[in-house]
Image 1 (cartoon, rainbow, N blue to C red):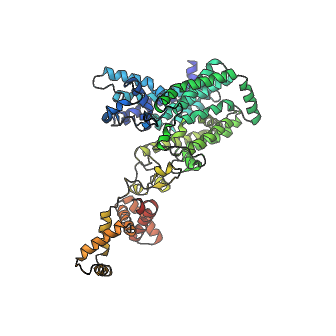
Image 2 (cartoon, rainbow, N blue to C red):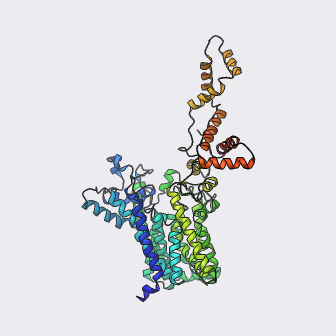
Length: 578
């Protein structure tokens, strides 16, 4: 009872998350949708389980006999040996497995569902699996933070990390993605690392090897957590050297940790050998994916409107003030976290797809939010000691939490792009729950083909840009020149022996212009007219243009035409892109 009272605030926070996440998961009903929760990358992370336990065929040969039903659930790559391979590593399947088993038993017992691995029971259990791991994460993270801070600080830190960042999105609307599970594993890693440094023994050594192996098997870049082992609680170069010397004396434990780490990877090595004839196989390379170490997009991954970490998770600005607070509190964790963070940002920014596909915010950063909770706790602790800040700072945090939750709802309604944003699109939809019609005309998408070559350019989304067909160009040329007597006379000169109506000559001329790719000016006119009509049909956009016209002392028509030309110049599909 005394322990419960001592942790009353943090217990309330854990209970709040249990209730809220459960309610959100039941409210959005994604598991009942056509694709369910097994979509995009999750198809690959999950595929190992039905392939192994239901179809008993990791070569995915069962797809040959059931392509119509199963093809949408599994997206394999072809290896150099001609075999199919699951794109991702199998680590997440280990964490899915208990919930897959529950879903499979439910499907076997309930006659209305098929035990295929993809019917409704599997989607429901998978949707809620991350909630279980997250609740465990909170309990473990509370233990870590309680070493340094009182319970009210711990509670506010837990609530802020869970509700004020894009982690919340990956606990609810995109729950089975890797990030909530990696958050859990890295929190466990920190917990065992603390224990191990205080008392190096076989138990904590095995736990560290197991957890680090598994978190790396889910996302190989997470191997960088191993950097924290020699860096933990050091603040100077001399302390680092002393720590390395100390750890080398425990080489049998280090060897055991490495052995356990490798043991976790053995099933993956065996699988890769089976499908590719290699123990190490980079499956993403089959799609042309790679790192560009000489061209890291560090500024963009942190600050850009496209998918900048600080833009879409501004709470993390606050965390950086916590490094100074850690120093004041004599908690020697600033340097280890900063070194780890610096290297991790460089690695993540070097990946060809630095925005990490369709996602809310920088999803690749969610994994290490448990580590960031420590400096966040420090800045909260320091602020609560100040006379005025102890009232103002919690309110400021709740504003950031509310902003994050609003952004999530914007994302769900496409007011924040699934792929990436741009400056004008961001501010056009700022604090608007739904996208405006103007937004759809200024939104841009990444050019994926060029990005795979390390070239980062934005293009107009094909489904938004008005498609200008050859027939539209022909009609435009004919319409623009039907009263052009000079052109019509010249066309008659070229056909002196054949008397053709002007309409036929002009139509033939227009087709010749289009065929020879000489219709760029007409293409531009069509597009500008399209945007001009868009402005006139959008009341909000129309009001914006009218205000600009009054400010510049121009007519509305003139200003609207200028706005349409600006949109064409900056955001439209161009003639050579059609």
